[in-house]
Length: 182
Image (tube, rainbow, N blue to C red):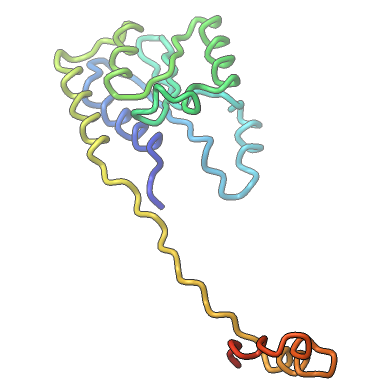
């Protein structure tokens, strides 16, 4: 199953962190969109993950930087803005002293890290721009191949029911003309 655009950005940011952050750090990614069992959100809630939890948490020099990742190139779309639950969670994190924002590209992530005081290498912006170009060039997922609809076929019992006196063949003699037997 191909990755969604938001997941592609998350993976790029995880790699970016390893390349540009010049001090020891921990980074965690939370993906609440995958729920194969139908019960994953219940288990995650019991572990402390709530609706609106930001996708990435970077801990560096005793500071927590939380970023909500959004699909690249969709910043202008209202449907791809942080939800009310995400905005509320970011507000609560800020009140607790953490840095919390939304990002739509690797370049924005670097800007947020810099604003939060994360020590970055001197070419962090160039590396982020390269990652963004890689994401943009990524081939879109192939659409699922659709099959042609099968010709309608009736089983012999249905044909016999139509042929009975008073059956649908009596009402419409052309009904059986285009039918195929199984």
